[in-house]
Each structure stands twice: as C-alpha cells, then as structure tokens.
Length: 289
Image (cartoon, rainbow, N blue to C red; front, top):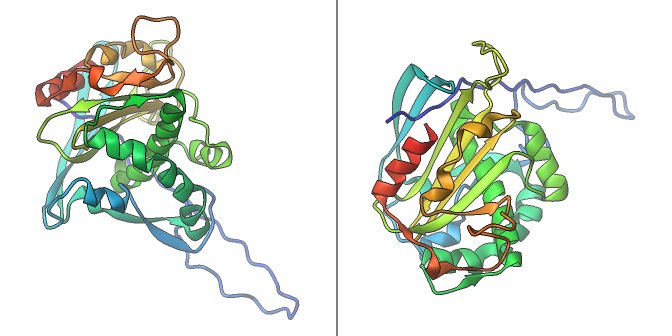
C-alpha cells in the first residue's frame, strides 16, 4: 500500500510600507508573517480543523499521540515511483487540532455560519441515525466539507496542493471549486480523525517533469459513523484514471450524478447505504493508487 504526498509548498509574503499623515512609518508586520488563508487578512485566530462541538458527539482521548505519514511520489497511468517516505508522531488527537491560519472576520463570520448550518446534519450522520438527506442538506454539507478540507490541508503543509485561488473563490461565492469530487458513507471501523495525501499525477498528454506543479490531493475524514472522502485537482484530465471510487459503498454528493441508477440529486436515505469497514477503506486506497 502506498500513500502519496507531494513536495513542500513555499509561500512568499510581501508587505508594502506606506506613510501616515504624520509621515511616520507605522509598525510593520514581521517578515514572513502568516495571513488568513482565505482573504489574506489579520489578525489571525485559531480554527479547529474539526469543530469543537463534535467532542460531545464523539468522545476521544486528547492525550493520544497520532501518526502523520509523509510521502512524496510520482504517479503515472501505469506505475508509481516512491521518492520519499517519512513518518512523524504528533501529540494530541487530530480531532482536537487547532491551526492559526484564519482571520477573526472569516472565523467569526461566514465560516461560523457554515458550521452552524451543518451542525444538526453532521450530528445525525455521525450517530448513524435514520435520516434522509434532502438536496438542501447535501448542498450545506458539501460546503462544510470543502471548507474543512481547505483548513485541514494546512496541518500537513508539506503535502498542500489546493491552490490559493480556490480558497479565495470559495470565500467569495461559497461554491465548490471546479474539479473537486466528494463522497460520503456510513462507517463502522477503527479509524478516527482525518488523513491527507498530496501528490503529482502525470496526464498522459503532458510530459512529466520533477518541477511540474503538484496537482492532486485526497482527504479522508473518519467521524465515528461517517466517512468523507474528498479528491481535488488543479489539472485537467487527471480524473480519467480514478473511476472506481463510487463502487466502494460511498455516495458521491459532488458533483451530483443525474439520470443514473447510482446516487443522484434525489434525497439520500442514509440507512439505505451499505456500511464501510476498514477492509473497504483498504480497497478504497488500492483503487485510487
């Protein structure tokens, strides 16, 4: 089994001096100071990767150490070349992790609104309750998943692949960016938390170069009775190699499938979905890579 993660991203921050009416230079931010990933604003506040209220739904031990795997690989249509393999152990459960990456206005504004809009839906899915997801529920859930994936990726900065333009556009219009795919399903397994992978896939029409932009990320969230799988890319043609995910008991909620015997834009009775276990998760990984 191979988990694929790409090269380290470097973000250059530029600040510009300006004069006040008194011709005195204001205090400048420190060189390389981080700014909000969504709008570039300040001051920054800490944002939970997984909302704090979930602790009441999913009890967990915050003293647990968690393993973060870091891999760098090249994937083509026929072969996978492993370049780097590394493992890190971090303190604390990943569900309790907070990141200093969003500003006060974003965190307390539109992000808070998305959290509140999906709280009851998420609670029901996590507890595997007998509910039916309506189209409006699916749209709200999709927006929350996109936001959470964008935030969670910064916990694995070396494998960051989502372009900043996607974050900016999502903040402006709350629309899922192009070339994103999202699946959800019922889960009964031993995993809890999230796992992120970033890597490069060579389009058959484009020669591969070690300097090519990293172009694909996958994020998987394990939240008790709920599993979420997200794949996004900034390259056209990458998805042609990944067509088997929907066969592994997961319902694709973005983009919605129309005129199909599979999951559609019609309501989804949650209990009608088959349950995903840890063996299915291994199959999911195998079908991707």
